[in-house]
Image 1 (cartoon, each protein chain N blue to C red):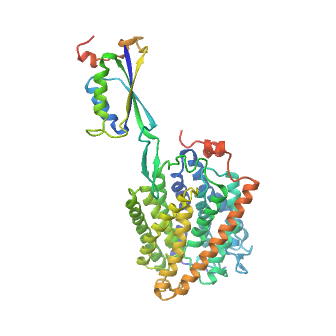
Image 2 (cartoon, helix red, strand yellow):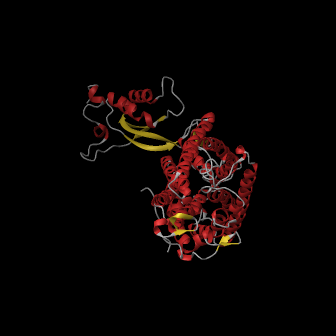
Image 3 (cartoon, each protein chain N blue to C red):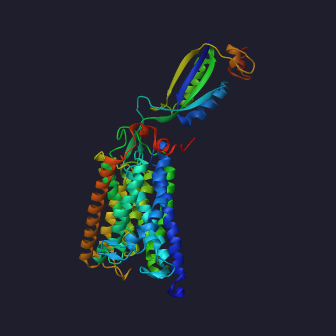
Length: 409
Length: 129
C-alpha cells in the first residue's frame, strides 16, 4: 500500500469533481440531440445517450478500463490485469502520482460513456434499439478501448510517436464523428428524407443541452490536467475562449446568409468545445481563440457539404465532432507551445513543423481505423439483426414502437 | 337565417380580432389552433447551417355563429383587424362563410337565433329584439 499522504487532496478533489462534470455531459448531449429530432422520437433520442451511462458504466469496470489502460501489449491494447477494476485502488496508479488510481479510472470512464453517445446523432429516429446496444458494446470494445490505448496509455503507439491529444480530440471526437459518418452510410436515410420536413421539435432543449455541455466540458478539458494546478487553469481558459469565439463566428456565418439562428449559435459553441479539446493544455488563450473562430466555418460548411450530398447523417456528428476534432488536432500541431506545457511540444508556429506531421498521421490513422471498423461492424449487424426498425415503426416513431412510451401526453 | 364564419387568421392577430369583434358586439366565439399554408406555400426558417422550408405553419381558426343580417359588418371588422399593416401580406388568412341549420343552447334548450343571443350583443345594441 502506497503512502496515502502522498496523494494530493486538491488534485484528487478536482479530478473527482471533473468526473462528475463529464458525467453530466452525457445527459446534456441527450438534450442537445433530443431537441433536434421530431417529437415522436424524443425519448428514444434521449435514451440513446442516457443508456450509455448504464452500458459503459458496466463495461468500463468489467473490462473496458483494462483494455484501454491496462499494462501494454505490443502498443496496441491493454492486457486483462485490471479486469473488474482488480488492482485499481485507492493508492496512486501508473497515470498520476497525486490522485488515487480509482479517480483516474472513474474520470476516464466518463469519456468512455460519452464517446459512443456522440455517435448516436447519426442514426436517430430509425435505429433498432437492440441492435444499437450491441453495436455500442462492440464498438467500445474494438474501437474505443484500443484507440484510447494507442493515444493515452503507457506504451500506446500513437502517443509514443509524439501525437498530442490533451483531452480527446482524436480519441473522442474524430473517432465519434467519423464512426457516425460510416454508420449513416450503412443505415441509410430516414424515411422521407430529404423531402419530408424534419424540423427540430424543441430548440430550447438543444440550447439547454449546449449550455450544460459547455459547463461539463471544463471537467473534460481542465480535468484532463489530472491536477488542481496551473495547467488546469490554462485548459479552463483556453476551453472557454475557443468556445466563445466559435459561438460568435458561427453567428456571423449564419448572419451573412440569413438570420443568426439560436440553433446555430448553440452548435457553434459545441464545435468550439470540440476543436479546443485536443489543444486545451498545449496552447495559449489567444491560440485557442483562433482555433475556435476557425472551427465554426469549417463545421458550418461541412454541414452544407453533407446536405448537398443528400446524406442523412442526421444531427451532423461528422461535421461538428469529426471535422471540428480533426481541425483541433491539426491546430494543436500549429499552436502548441512548450511555454504552456513542458510535457507537450512546440507546433509549427513555434518553429517545429514535425509536430504537425505527427498530428496529421494520428488523425489519419484514427479516421481510417474508426471508419472502416464501424462500417464493417454496422454492415454485419444490418445483415444479421437489422439496423433499422420497420417502415411502419419508423412512421409511428421510436418512442412508441421501441419503448412503448409517449413523451408528451 | 344563421351563418357560421370560419376565419383562418395569424396567431398573433387573435387578440386584435377578438377585441375588434367584441367592440361591435360579437361576444361568442371559439377557436382552434391549426396548421396549414396557402398559395405562398410556407416560409423559410434559419437552420443550423442555411435555411429550410416549413410548409405547415401554425394558424388560428376562429369560429363564430351569427345572424345573417350581421354578417357583412362582422366580416368587414374581421378583415380590418386581421390584416397586416395597411395593404396586408401573404399569410393574413381566409374567411369562409357557411349556412347553419340549427343551434341549440344546452342550458335552456333555446334554438336558432335565441340560442346565439347574449346580453349586450350586436343586435341589442342596434335596438333589435
